[in-house]
Length: 394
Image (cartoon, rainbow, N blue to C red; front, side):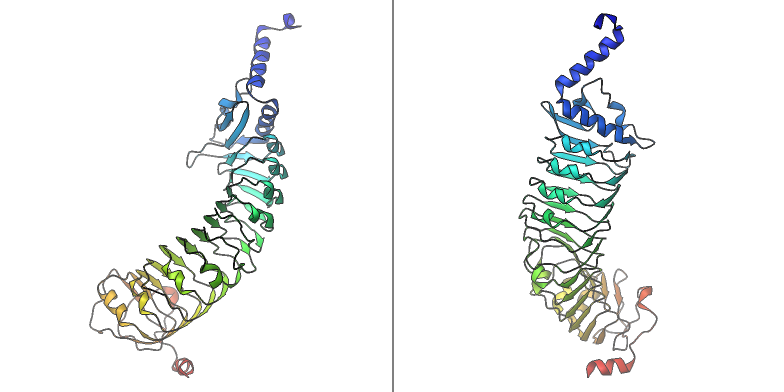
């Protein structure tokens, strides 16, 4: 029959046979299905190279090992370039050798296909800053080699499947900026270094042994998580970033958390209570404990902090003299002590606070020795009503 074909058609058939010969037929058909389910956003030409009359292993974002696709990076990776639109075709599960699957930020919508659970060799899954909705498939718990799971900045709902926490090789879990609810599952992987679940609707409490000591980055801010964290934090001495702010955590703070090798400790806007007692001089540059229920005296060991937020708590007593020395030498950049029950600070009223230092003392049980600009949210009242101070003292 070939003698009846034009030269152009013969050439097309020849190219298709060559493509099939170079790539596993199932992978070839799967790439076709993926292409049909997605398009370039205006200004993107990512799919321009996806000409199925040529070798698919030369397509942009397609990487092969022999006749199988092992990595699929969909979209132009250049920062700021337009992404893709469409859905993730369930056929993705047929790329049985796939180890890496990413989609650049764009307008991919719909649910994650359940067929992702068939990708037994998958190590890296990153689909962030799109419009993925629905729930995280529990089938991801079958991907026992998965190391990175990044589904951040989407519209995911439902809970984090418990089985995801059992994955033995996880090193990065980034699910921030979604609409996830339920509790934080225990994570078993001793390779886990980054856990980012901020800006969701998570609740419940943290299991004391639910986070591995390998963690270096922990962000749970802007959720509704409750319960104590002293048993959790005291085990995580490798942390170099901690943000538990804007939750409903309770209980006391372990003294060793102030010795962690971190640059920014964010525990503000919770319900922590009791005294705060670091074990040593605090070398963390920024410590924010504001808007809690912490009480007792302010430890002089905090005087070495450059940016210290202790405002809106229940601290009492005098501000330690070591703070004054650091203030006047401009070693402290921010010292917010407003809205507590502090009774004084030994500072000469005629002294000039360095311009580079922000000091706020208002709404305490003291006559302010110096007038300093405070944040607008601190209000206009300079001191607490005497009745509140007497009641506190009593």
